[in-house]
Length: 297
Image (tube, rainbow, N blue to C red; front, side, top):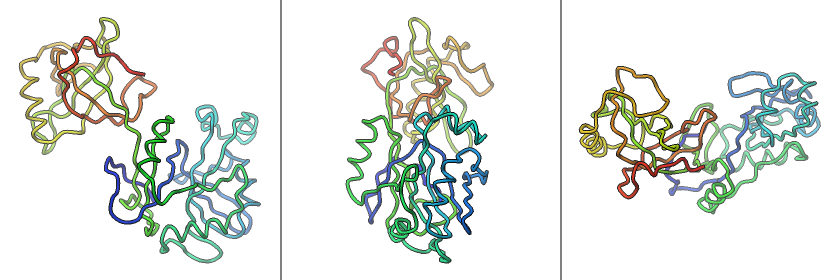
């Protein structure tokens, strides 16, 4: 079961709030004492996490199918290892945070409400490190999200308390991500596609000294009025060459503009390549000159 990304906090019905881990989703199958850990694309992970296999073999009290997330303190150094010997030698600790129980002791639990499945999960597993129960709250979700963002976390997961487990993406589970925001200079835009009019995505950047650095394409956050207003402001700024010191090569669907307009963009994080991840246009800014726009963190 996969969560749906949203920017709107749920207000109707009863919800359960859990931390969002920056790890690897894992389904655990325990049958006759044999433990198998699979990734969400059905790859066997036993060799990558031998200590979890060992811990689960004694922690799970019967045949079960469990859902959770594998997290490591030093994720970059550990998550790429697939050899059991090298994984142990890395000395990077991993933990398995379990949050759901789909099957236990001969019973299919997917039709039960989420909170009932969590009760069974508590009974089915003896939680001792590195196996951890994912703590949840039934209220205070807004404060939990705010705290996660202040601590540099990814966000939280909101799950409808009465939701059944379905093997697909569902709006009964929601991802609420921490959104960073800052100003960026508009340096171009792509042609519209499908039913969208005026423009497709904005190409944005920031100044590093006198050079305008490319930060990526922003393709969401627009309504019809915003698209029309942006297009009206951008047309007089058309130019034949890119204003970016480095960036995307000229393509047929890109129109460059003089870097004079500043827009505010929300995004989840910077990628290792220095581009915005999950950017969303929030609006134009008239209170900051383009030349003063710098990368903030």
